[in-house]
Length: 185
Image 1 (cartoon, rainbow, N blue to C red):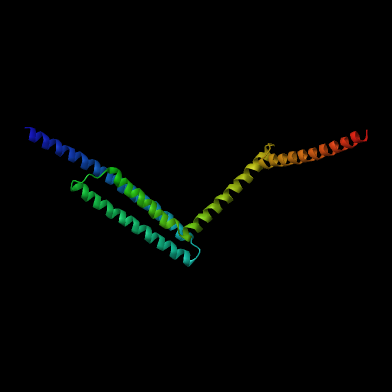
Image 2 (cartoon, rainbow, N blue to C red; image 1 turned 135 degrees about the horizontal axis):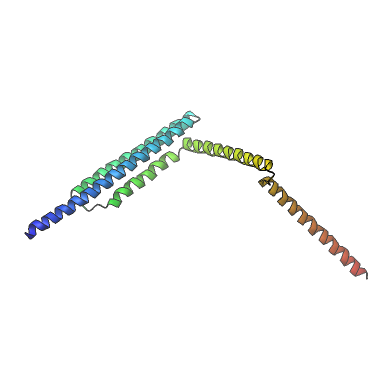
C-alpha cells in the first residue's frame, strides 16, 4: 500500500509540475508572440520612415538579426522543455529569463540601426512640435483670461535680476563716494 501511495504522490507531483510548466510555457509563448508583434510593428514603422536605401537595408538586416535571436530563443525553449520532460530540474523562472534576455537582445539588434535612430529622431521632433503648439495654445488661453503666462513670469524674473545688478552697482558707487568724503574730512 505504501508503494502505491508513493507512486501516486510522485505521479501527482509530476502532473502538477508539468501542468505548471505547460501554463508557464503557454503564458511565455503568448507574451513572446505579443512582443514579436509589437517588435514587428515598431520595425515596420522604422522601415516606413527610413529616408534612404542604406537605412532601409540596415533596418532589414537588423530585423533579420533580431529574428534569428527569436528563433534561437524558441529552440532553447524546446530544448529546456525536453530536459524538463526527461526529468531534469528546470525552473519556471529559467523559461521566463530565456524570453526576457532574448527579447532584450532582439530589440537591441533593431534599435542599433540608423533606420531606428532616424525614426526616433523624427518622433522626438514631432513630439517637440506638438509640445510647442500646446505651450503656445496655453499661453494664448492664459492671456485671454488675463493671467500671467510662463513668458510673463520669466520676463519679470529677468527684470528683477537686472534691477538687482543695477542696485549693486549704485551701492558700490555710493560706497566709493562715502570713502572719498570720509578721506577728505
